[in-house]
Image (cartoon, rainbow, N blue to C red; front, side, top):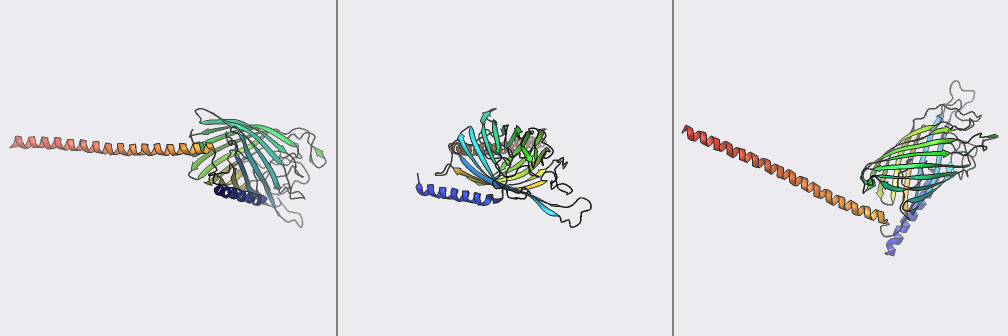
Length: 381
């Protein structure tokens, strides 16, 4: 091994990790780690020994103006939604990876404002099970959320009970290219069940939830790669099976559409830019005294969220830092390019041959016409 190159790569990765920590002072994510779009998980996992760290920035703001005639001395104020996660994903086996996400900042609109730290998330994903001549990949995810933050149940955001929440999700992916899945169009479907496990838990000061809120989670995503850029379009949301109690801020089902792009200048680094657009209604059914949305023209959920993300591959470190799977894919890539060149050359040769055949036919027709003209001239002479 070239140790100079090893340390050069290691220093680059260490710098990247420091950038993540600095950047994560204002970041947010709804789905965590592994092979994913922004919000939609794919049917594939990391290869064994791969470690990724990612973080992202998402924010929403709106001026809360009074509906109707404002009371004396009323002053409109900006409402913010800013959260932050730093996410680690490690490939345990080629069909199994685990993701841990730490939410480090949440503007909750409570008196503490900074919920530091917030909740911890854990995903265990078993996937990369190929079928359909390797056009399809499927699997499942076990999802956990541990309520370690000082505050839970905050407005504009998905519901958090502050307890131990859990769920299961099925993931399915279709790849147009069966040999190089990331090279061509792909589509991804997520469907899952999730419980907030909040029965008997105090979710509002002095009030306990009377039942366990459960929900159907779903997501659909499309990816179309063009060179170093992936164009992505997603729809994701929830539909409550058992709706939370009326003191819960986020007790309505929600749906977001997310157009985005992913820029991949290096095999170890990519950046995401996108925007979440809410398609949910603003029918606020929460009944609590300090709901900031009461009498103000504020949505039930964030009506939009701007999104920026950074994704870094930390391991493996070494010359080129390529996994065996990536090396094999590069070989496939080279072979496909080689055969494509052969096909293009053959097509060009066929076009040339067709042109030669056309000229030959025209020459034969001209010779035939000349022969006929010669016979006419001889008969007239």
